[in-house]
Image (cartoon, rainbow, N blue to C red; front, side, top):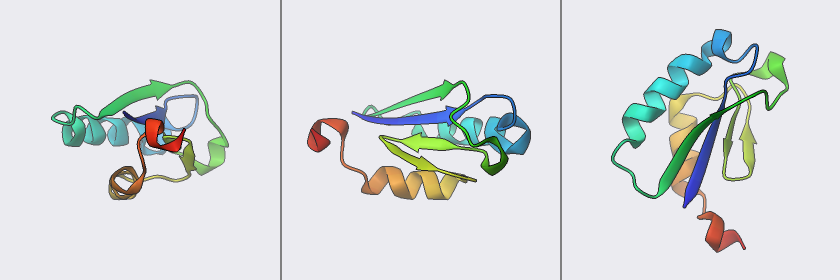
Length: 80
C-alpha cells in the first residue's frame, strides 16, 4: 500500500495544505492502494504545504506533483 501524508501543522494549512488535502481526498477516493492521512508538523514550515509520499518529502507540494510522485513510487512492500 502506498502512503500519502499531508502536513496539517501550524503553517501548512495557511499555505494551501487544507485545499491540497481536500483535492487529494477527491482524487484518491476510489484508490484502494493508497492510504491518505494528515499529520502534525513534518517541517520545514516555511516551505509548506509539505507532503510525504511513502518516504519522500515534497516541499511546497501541489496536487499534480503529489499524484505524479504517487504514480511513480513503488509500494512500501516493494521498497522493503
